[in-house]
Image 1 (cartoon, rainbow, N blue to C red):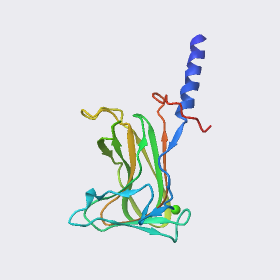
Image 2 (image 1 turned 180 degrees about the vertical axis):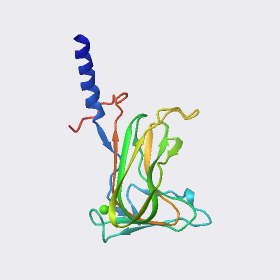
Image 3 (image 1 turned 60 degrees about the horizontal axis):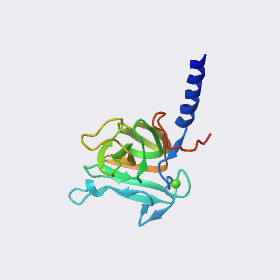
Image 4 (image 1 turned 120 degrees about the horizontal axis):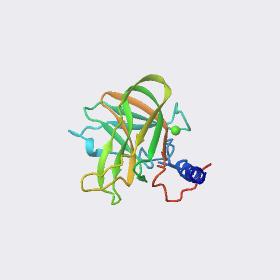
Amino acid sequence: MNKLIALLWLVGIYGFQASAEIQVINNNSFEEVKNNVPVNWAINEYFKKNNKLGTIQILSESAQDGQNCLLIKNDTTQVFHLIGALVAATPGDVLRMSAYVKGKGTFRLSIYMYNSENAWLDGLYPQSIKIESSGWEKKDFEIIIPDKEFKDKGKVAEIRPVIVVDSDSEIYLDNFSGQIEKAAIGASTGETSKK
Ligand SMILES: [Ca+2]
């Protein structure tokens, strides 16, 4: 009986911690704009080739949420990456991302991963999905933060969300959502549960 009580106690503790969620980014609806790029987001110029890169436009009509939506046009042979701000993450955390999209082409919501010293570890890219719609559709992606050592660089400590738009694509985006659900083990930083 004592074992059962102890087990229930553990479930209670870890269940409580597992429910803690952290929002990945502010300005997720692209309403705040500076220099024609949404605040908290940046275009990754690394993929520019022969002086060509996809383009981003802020549209103030036909938004899915609020006033603004994004149009990412990629008519190059390279991918286009719109990257979000750094946020702390722990191996085993579950990252749930979604966005409303329409247009034509392929895209995915991905992440870059960094160690505790902000050094790049790797990117993690779920499979691209095809979009061919004139109406807004919500698309969901789930990523589990890998629990492994990256060569001599250690484990993941921080991530960035990345909106990836492939070649030959015109994708409208709005109402991005990114939530980290903390792993049950290791979630000992004392986040306050929303429940
Ligand atoms: Ca919006």
